Every structure is written in structure tokens, then in C-alpha cells.
Amino acid sequence: MVSTHRARRWRYIHPFRDSRCGAETCEGGRYDGVSRGSGASVTIDFNLARKPWSVYDEEFICTLPPVENWIVAGIRAGEKIYRSPS
Image 1: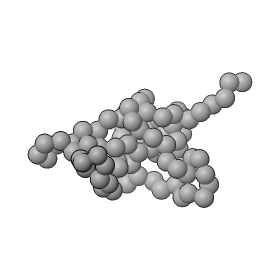
Image 2: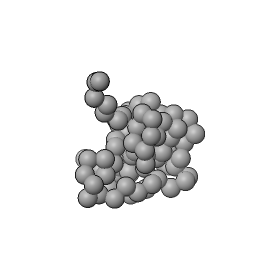
Image 3: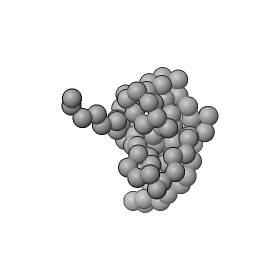
Image 4: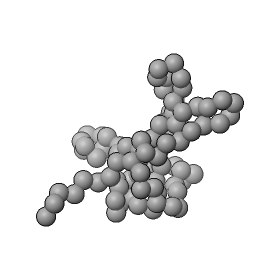
């Protein structure tokens, strides 16, 4: 995870991939913010899952999340692929 400091509390960037990748979400995976709780606990809010910058501009390289962050279940929260109405 990459750490950033925002609003007086630490947040971490959590790249992940789930079973919805390629069907409903970005093929390479998404990322979300992780808030540090008290002690060793963290909170992951998948509602805040975002597409990587490589979706918007091909100048950015799409990096895959590490295998440890591949989730077998489908995460239906967060940003999805936009499909225009036919």
C-alpha cells in the first residue's frame, strides 16, 4: 500500500482486483482508500473504489494489483465502466 497524509489522519491506497473486473469494472482492477483505525485496525470502504488513471488517459500505465489483493468475490460498490445506451 502507498501511504498519503490527508486531513490529519493517515490514509492508504489499496489497489485490488475482484471477479467483476472486465465485466462491470476496469479490467486491470481498481483502488480505494483505507483509513487507519485505533490500534492495528483499518477500515476499507469499497463504496469509494475508483478506476485507475489509465482508464482516462493512455499516457498512464495500468499496473495490476498484487496477487494478495485479488478478491474472489465480486465487489459491486464503487465506480463502474461507463457504457453508453445503445
